[in-house]
Length: 345
Image 1 (cartoon, rainbow, N blue to C red):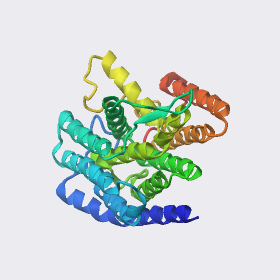
Image 2 (image 1 turned 90 degrees about the horizontal axis):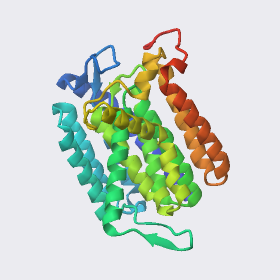
Image 3 (image 1 turned 60 degrees about the vertical axis):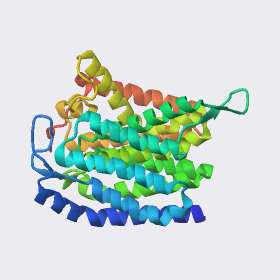
Image 4 (image 1 turned 90 degrees about the vertical axis):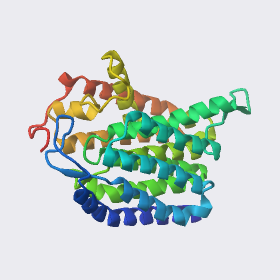
């Protein structure tokens, strides 16, 4: 019961601090001109602050102090998150190049690896464990952290989308971790669920603030670390699929974006475009709020599939197949029935 009580306390500390700090951070951003203005690559019709990262970061820090002694390597996780948030803050203010942002992400990922948060073994079907060579473990760990960090950044295109998906995924990680007795990942997952819940009050449609790169990169970094602390520690094929399914929407969307850009001869790290799934929904006539809720539902369904993997993998496969088929239909715009109220109603 202590584990559950601690998770509840961490959740509400993170929620309360993030909720309270977001408005003053928004006012600061507006005074400093850290805002998103309507444009060709934007869906917002008005000027909105884009500096939610610091509020979420301090909500994370407040809850992390409570959980400090219960999570091994919390100091290093905090330092890695600080590198990510600082990189995002500078980008929100001055617009860093893609290469510089990538270096910051690789640095934070390398820090995680060298301080023990890494993928280093997998289950041997014949029995026992197979330990990965250090160089391969480093490669996989960095690719995972950097990849997921960027998937959440790319999916952050509609009000409340990235925060809501992260919240659902974090709650999924929390349930899996509690069931498996993984206290560290359970606390971190509860913490991030609290952070995103507190921020969603100000970020859901119509958003009073956007999270900016500082927030989106932070969320992606933290959920990737939670997976390494929890699901990936089990080292089985099914446990690997839990975070992949819970984060299925941003992973699919990013993979689709990479293929799209490669086929078009564009750099993979090029500026954001309007070819993402949420943009396609808007272009097809879906209302802003409805498009976000639909992607929440898909994420929730994938998360249910992730939970089913633990006890009924065959049922999870049927559910995933149905979700993949549905998502495939959404990509084909002609199969989407527009809402009557237009794209931003």
